[in-house]
Image (cartoon, rainbow over all chains, first blue to last red; front, side, top):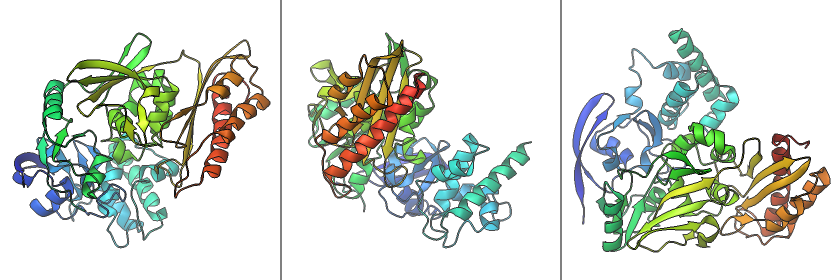
Length: 161
Length: 288
């Protein structure tokens, strides 16, 4: 009884069509089926936040959504946020302020903050802490991530002005 | 940490979902997936059939009718949090939602899923009990309604037949100007609450004309403290009266689990309830 389905979705702006076992979660689909290993899988039960991706613009845990549920949707992973030559303001700020050490939590931090800063362009440090409360980091102690997020928010506001 | 194999169904209508639920062997309804997906991944749940409600028409949305907000069972927690009707009519729910998991889980999690999962510390269950919610249920025999107070049958067990599903929740709202507060204590923000406290209060001429006092996380279901409510109803809400009502929490039956023993829950409940009542009173225009 290994049921599978063919799904079509947009990932980082490109259309993909692929076969997926119905029990496969979106995180494994992105990594294993599409080869987009930028999305990291930590706990696979919704606690660590490492697998966070944007589905139709909203930050969700890719381990808590079936790949078949993404059929017809638009998914953005960390690979879709910026390029090596043109980093997303969040990525640039993470580099500048030591927002990462081992990098395992980083894709989830970036995608979560990407949506958060869209909705809250001028957050306080306390609001940033609550926004990333669902993302575990075992290296940084979070302070540098909060600093980076505030700096990115400033850069994004300036770019809009 | 991968789900065991299951067959997947994504019906488009409530009738189709109900038909699948009544005819398939060992089915499970999938709402927002923020509790069921971990259970599948950890192989705590073994359904043969997963019936996904995410593409069913007519299960989402918030409307106002006859002094209540009617909320579709598949309405996302994030949408509720930001909905102007919830903000205007149910500020208690808006406040409680900020404690429900995290930003990313509220983007998927639904009100119906939260109620049916019936976790003892679920904030939305406590809010529903505080507001005397009415649940709309559909099954093969048609539609029926039941009170939130009759909903918990046991630990994480709602009073639903296996072939029934929750379709909407009606929450009667309190008049503008009422006081409210949702308070909780958890080890970290977004964790399951050890105890939560919901208070609603109305004042007229310096006296309490209506009050609702609810605890979450102390037992299998939410606990409405009718005796504490009776103590405050008609009274001048002095600091002493509020302490007296909150002290009632120290005499309740509370559960013990690895997170906290019963005595700790009782003391925590009394403290949180005092704070919640004080804040609700201040918001109702009284002195805290």
